[in-house]
Length: 278
Image 1: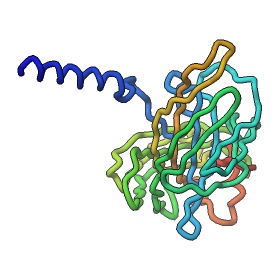
Image 2: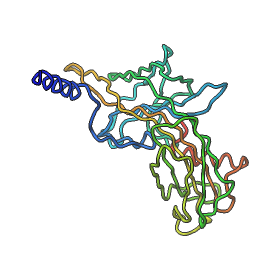
Image 3: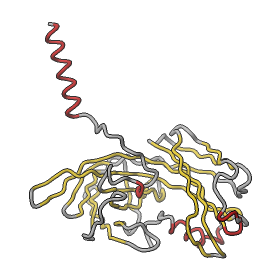
Image 4: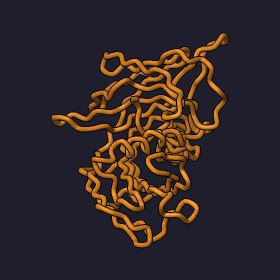
């Protein structure tokens, strides 16, 4: 009897080793362009856009893993969601990370069966939609004082991040990202204090600096797909990311960017690679 029990335990252990989760250390990214090539060759991302009539809409993007080899086959990719085919078209310009983008936000619901195809690679999965955060940013920002940001989320997501950035600006022109700090925080947090002087002024000059602060909600997993070669087929790792990236822009002289400065705010977000449509 003792021998039988030991045999059963060994069998269970072997099954766990054969069919368990991938035990490699996976770095959790705050945004899809941060996914390492070592973790995933491709990244399929769903960025929360808006909720209309209780329906959630997402922009879809496909990227190569960061620091991966250059991909030269720019054939259009597509995803199929509940039988509906959605084209992803390649874009590479100054306001986008190079990748494949959906033309407009797409309706997603929990447990949608999703298939991705970019010849000769394909993958199938379901996505765990994020619960969007309703973030309250202060009306103005003084870099010499701490700033509290709070938010509410209907249900916890897998991961949360906070972000602080400074941008070099001159007049209405945005020159470049000067400094960026991203921190992973507890998924239970619903408030964060950005400390005084938490992000650097551009060349110590407040007139040349604008600030961006953000809260990011993330669900992320690694999924196996397949690719076909002249020698058969092999496994390919995909990072699948569903996320919300809620940011606010502040100008050192004006406070928060208001409706009249919408074009300026959009240029900041464009350069940050957050908009998936032109």
